[in-house]
Image (cartoon, rainbow over all chains, first blue to last red; front, top):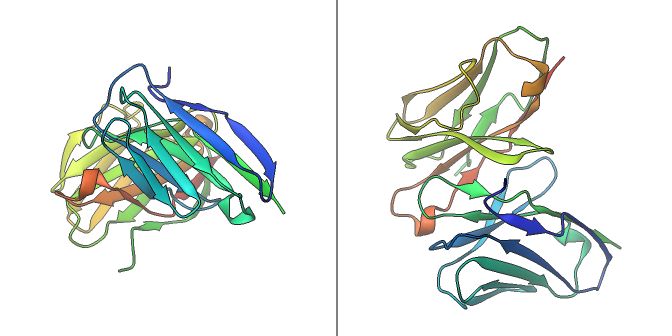
Length: 109
Length: 115
């Protein structure tokens, strides 16, 4: 059983479309991280959210942490082929990092 | 900074052989992590070290797996004997105490295939 459930598992869209992916847990955690992993590479940290209800923006990416700190979402506006990759959420309460299974996004030109 | 360095990038071996994966963390980082990634199980934490000392190895699948960190700039993950089900991408990551919420920096991974 995954501590963090990510949905959808796969997503294929056309360039220019908007999308949202989700990360859910039955547990409360003090912080959550989003990573992006491109083929043949290791994950790279995008953002850390800490406060319930927090919203962070990174160019066309908007990250939200749920009020109860049990869920998070990542919204991408006007997706581009360069956004293609595996998006992973991870709980970072301590150094015992646990990752979700990820959402594999493909953006077609 | 060169980032986390892993070697080899690809390893193909036969069942029963010993496999050694290597990692050089980012200089100044005092935490080192080993992960395994498969399509079925995703990214799993195997073991992590703090100041060269193993802190939590509960993710190590079985006694065939062992990890060492003889100094601050080098770690190994060994599988002996290897089995086909060990085929996966193995990542090493490092982080620095006091860094913002344990941001981890990952290496490029070693893709292991056991025939």
